[in-house]
Image (cartoon, rainbow, N blue to C red; front, side):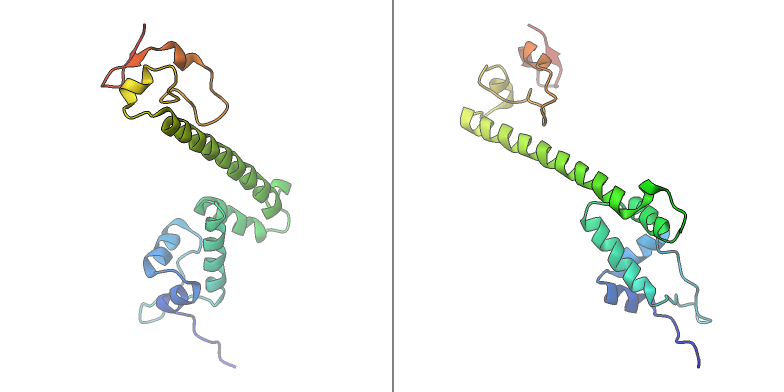
Length: 162
């Protein structure tokens, strides 16, 4: 039985739902590594490359960076891996990051709503008003209150003390 030839770049990209530039970018950054070439110089990918590309795209949609995806793929190929290297632990960590970003975005949304409700039309004028939530509110509950001690900000963004 003869071995089936590998898939060419366009076939892999189409099957995985990515464009050729994305495939080349992944090859440069890894994974996947650049495949062997045919005698004519064409890249020939194993059929598993389609699955790897789909996994990469899915993991990226879940918020993993390409480097994190590479680590996850690498960890999956090792039998004696660290306990914190697998998907479960990484997913828990990523979930905590997502929850923190969501909390930050909720705080930003609330601050923007407060600015709308306060009638802020101009940052410099509004910043001098006690009712203005901008620009001194921080995106999370980490607000120290120190910024309220400043009375204004000049046009270059330099803080002017009272």
